[in-house]
Length: 461
Image (cartoon, rainbow, N blue to C red; front, side, top):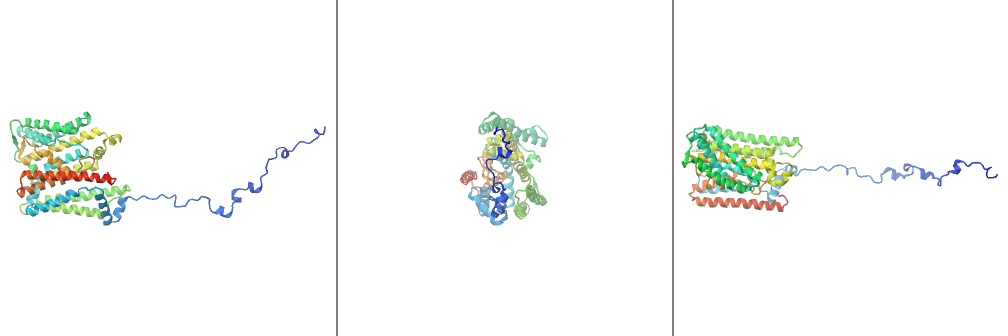
């Protein structure tokens, strides 16, 4: 009875918490923190730690330092093996000095014009070789393709009376088709380029002889396109000076346009002072050549061959540096497998490059025919191929692929023709000319090999 009489337990009594929190324990951190703890966060990061550190392109630093910066950059490149066109430019200066001392007429108007004219045909062929070498391959059929091009023109125009211009176009197109055929066997069938073009050298030489028939040679008609390729001169002085002015303005315009595009893309660009300096150097070179071709006694004016050669160089340089096709050629030459994995149609690039080489070989063959007075069974034989390859290599194009410039064809061919012109003027025998040209070629390859090894050592290859 006593237990039943007890009153019910209150909630506080029946479910009392095990521990009762003190005010200090229930207070918020803000209420219990010391003044030092409330004013300074425990792990506050510095305000400047989160700010991104801007990166500066080294080329901007070089240009901001002015002449000192450019000289430092130039010295770094030389130590790293990036010689560029420096060896061939120095070589040209030495050649000019040596032969001018031996014969005062070496730098005369007629001598300079001869060097320009004789450089044109083989130089155009060398442009095609430059593309093939950048690809990392070789074309041994250049001489025989040049002979076939000249033979096709002679048979169509002289023997069968076809229109002069049309026969020239067909002759150049025949070189294009031959080159595409070489490229097909190389890229699609897998035959090495050395073997394909060596077979082409033999086969197209036979076709050239067969096309010429019983005739040992077919002379170029007077006043024909082929004859005028190397025989025509612009006697008006305005032609040479006008071409020099156009070249300078075009060069300056390209530099300004490039600087504008790079600034718009927030990329380093050349300052105005550098553009002015570069343009000034090019202007001096162009107008000095125009003066030599026009003003001295015996000057004949601007040769058409030089105009066409420069036009081919400008177009080819634009294709190599400013088009997607040109970038793909360098990519394939640098690393074909990497280019394939990047989505480049390697086979297509190789076929097109060999087609371009064949086309320029046939076009250059017409210049050789013009110099020799017409097409012959032996046109393109002898040392033609060796001179074409030597011009590209001496000018700075690497034999190992992936590196080279179209303008190296001009520089290399001027070196070769200057040596031959100078040796002829001092009465040196042909065999001595061959030995000297071979030595220059070997020196160019040695420089290229040493340069690549130096770049690998410097970690820049």
